[in-house]
Image (cartoon, rainbow, N blue to C red; front, side, top):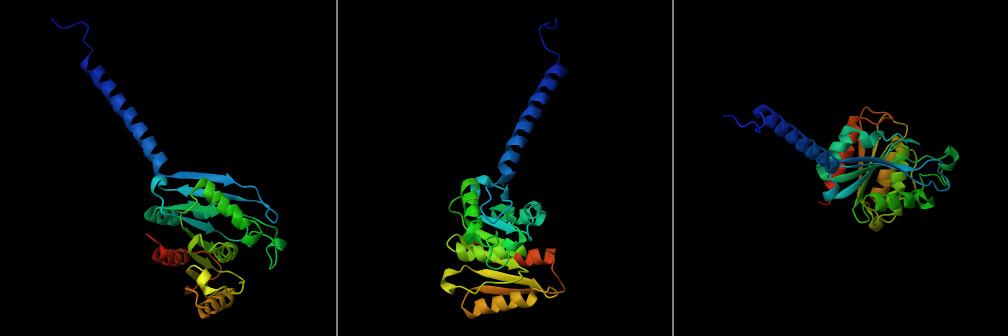
Length: 246
């Protein structure tokens, strides 16, 4: 006679299927949490800044090998570079924390001699380093890429904190400071479109630094005006990839 206490076979199978689905969901959630993290961190803006924050993308928190800091154009705080697939793929490939600054300043504070975020010695540099130390790491090498206004910040940050910077690339910067002692400067790349009004300033800055003995690549971008194109990003990534220390 059949056992009246026995559970129907299909009921048992359904329970097993539900249990397996639950396990898979937990594993998927755990993997996604480990695989990457997106966040925005508001920062206390120092004098000369009207807005301050960082966007952060961590592709693999347990095995980071460096930090890539991106700086978009003048007063751009939308985080578009940090969310761009071409930069995320690059960060994943090289196990880099991806950070984009979200800094803004009044226009009169960004001119030469001002105290805006273009000038890290007046507060924006420490602001970034403190944020990296708190949210990423205190000792990983920093790689930098900046476009236009972001290039102003990048070109000066590497002079202000050369001991933390492994390499930098600045694209389409309108004016440049005098070159520093070559022994104190990390390798860099200066890029500009040949149709950009900033072309001569960038070329002259690269040549002046090369004459000082700095390790500087000059990279003109053909048929390009003042815009950030896939070709520009590919050129910058090619340079940074060659400088990675692992």
